[in-house]
Length: 314
Image 1 (tube, rainbow, N blue to C red):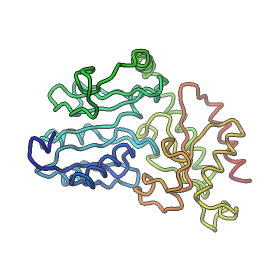
Image 2: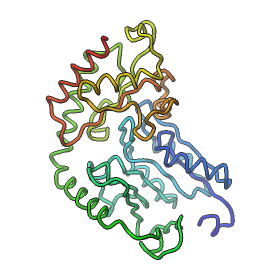
Image 3: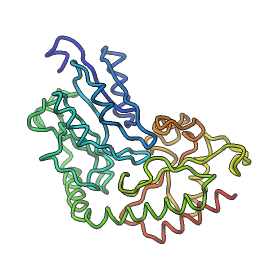
């Protein structure tokens, strides 16, 4: 739509820690349609600086897309400050709220965002359904598919009513429980991260902010140190398979964890998110993502700490 209205392609801004669903689209537009793309750096904790964004905006900037909460390391972005900058410069602002929808308050009546995306499966809803919220004063995106007038002509096809109802019910329940559930998850995060720092100072690095309040509720992300001066370096494993090895060993002890992003399960490439923090490729390959939810208890966390100590010593 921007190209049709302005007669040329414009400029897009994303952060270096975005989900591949955003980065891949930006790269596609850059290589196939000639869009200019700026990828913003982040701090060592994965935060986009508002000053960095302000300096990156150009006269032809059409859209800024910066996620609310990171899907790997859990970092929360200052989207209110980032959105205010976009508003002041007349630039549309999109935030990927897949990780925070139903977990943290999002008051869209006053938050300076134009587009918000979310997904049901992250809040115990059905898989395969998501949402796009568009501010009443923002430009409605052109459809990607054609052939029907459903959903205001934005996305044709018969709606999956059962999934829609499931999404709405899951969202309602999460919002009702948020006041108690979010602080509880922050407490569990702090319990786990404090234990990791105390027990494995030379074996494990925590990626992202150390304050639970600065992370997606329930998220803890680790990198396993593989330098030869540390105990883990003595094991006959490469950084690329240490994370998967730990996942398998912990699975046998009853814990379902992930090595990196669930969307890239089995990928051989290092985490672009951990690399963006300025960390080594070895640390970006040897990662472990821990996600806690409504069924996670203090006892679960304590058992995980014990299990992690066993597998790191083996």
